[in-house]
Each structure stands twice: as structure tokens, then as C-alpha cells.
Image (cartoon, rainbow, N blue to C red):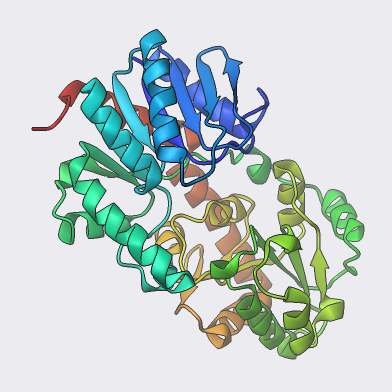
Length: 387
């Protein structure tokens, strides 16, 4: 079986040892064939990794659909695809539908976030994202199968778009949880805390991710300020690239008098992030929306109880009152209150963290996730192009 995939961005797709390349190669191994991955990239060029070929368009976003279509038509000559799949319901889906018509192969459209009928997402760039929303609503019904990463989005596809329930699957991106599930000794944890300048005994709240607007770092800071009222020695450990933020996060920290309580680590490798989580007490998450939230699964695998806003992704990961707490979106006081509950009860915090570890490792085992994705690929290819 060969798969023709249209994607966005080539981050990590230039190294054979990177997580995206290893994941795609595992898909290729499971299907016993070849994957041609067409990605938007101004650099152009091709990378060969055995059963995976990465083709870069060498264009900008506006010219991407046509450029990816042309590259895909050429790639299909060498590896005739049994399935076309796209990584979003916008530009890649448009190219996918052109290819579906030209090659007469079934199309599976993926959605790794929660865009449909999402007022928070549309509010970020109202004119542009309203147009994207209309495009997605037009393109999605013309595909043959659909993959989403949370149950809320699946229900929207079924109820509001009228798509057939048996062809819409919830399949999160496989998470490499090995580094996070590994238990650290007390000495290793102490050494890690010392590395980040955290005093012995100080409560540590952790956050990790790309600090873009919808992650709501200013709200996170407001919640942390509330935590500090009851835990004045608490520290907030932030793993991420501050320069990606659309807001002035230094100013937001000063507003809540947190300058001396924040530790920015920068972007961390998986093993380093797992070490940081091992030295933390609670993971705090303040996103206004989230498709899945891989970092929530990673924190749980590390034995951290999570307090998070009740986004679509968080609701599929956190078991309320057992592995963490869910609070209303944009409610800093509720985030602070639940985190303080955990900090004030070490035994409950420990039990909840252990339950989180067991739950995440069972439900989000990466082998199971890959099995589900490959099974949908095979079923969609076998069913062929819908009438």
C-alpha cells in the first residue's frame, strides 16, 4: 500500500532520527509500502528516507495548493497511491481534492485542532479565519473519510456537517511517552531542580508548549499569582520559546509581580522536558482551545496531576477528579484554586499523579495509536472513492 500525504511545514523532516521522520517510517513499515509526503517549504528540494520521500514545494502559502498538486502528480508516477491524505481541512484538503479527482483515489482529510464552529479560533484573525472556516465547510463533505483528534470535533462533523459517523475517527497523534514514564530517583530530581535554580522544597508549577496567543500565558500568569498568595515560595517553570509569543510576556509577568518566580528554560528535548516534569508538583494549562494537547498526555505519563481549562482536547485526556481537574476556559481563579488544592495535599497529589500515569500509558499507548491510524488508512483505501 502506498500513501500520498499533503502536509504543512517541514520541521524535523530533514533528519532520519527526528520524531516526525521516525513516525512516518513506522507508518510506512506497517502498510508495507511507500509514503510520499508533500510539504510547504520555501527551500524546495527532496529528502529520501527509504520508504519515506519528503518533497518540498519551494513556495509560499498562497501558491502551495497548486505546487503541491503538481509535485504529487509527479510522485504518483513512481509510487501510485492507494490513498491520499491531507493534514488539515484547508489548503492541503484543497490540493487533496484536486488529486482525488485526477488520480481517482480516496481522500482522507485530517484535522489536528478544533477549528469548526470555534469562535475563539475565528476571533484570532476574524476576516482570514472566517474565510478558512467557509473553505473547510465546503471541502470536508467532498472527502471519503475523516480523522480528528478529539470527540468534540467528531460530534461537530457528524451533527453540523452531516458526515457519516462510521467514517469519522478520533485518532490523536501518537505520543512517544517512554522518556516521560521513566521514574527518576530523588537525587536525579534534586539535581534537575538545582539546574533550574529552584530552591529545595519550593512548590513547582510546570507549563510547556509554544506560547502563542491561544495558549493564554497571561491568564496562566494570573492563575499563578493566585497560587502564590497561598504558596509564596512557588515557582513557575516554563518550557518554550518566549520569542514565539504574540504578547509581551515580560510585561505580563511584571503586572502580577512574578519576575523572580518564573524560570524560562527555552525549548527542551523530550528527555530534558521529562526531567523538568519529574521535578514539578502540578502541571497547569490555560489554553482557550486545544485540539488534543500532547503535552497534557506527556505530563500525565510523568506522574503529574494536571489542572487545565476544559478545552476539547483536555476533556479527552483528563479524568476529572482522578487524574487532574478541569475548570472553565478563561477562569484564572478556578485554575489557581484547583492547583492550590493539589499543593496542599501531598498524598492526594501523589495518588492522582500515579493514576494519571497509569491512565495515560494505557489509553495513549503509541503502538495502539499507530494501529488505529493505519487501520483507517487501509479501510479507506479498500472502500475506494465515494460516489
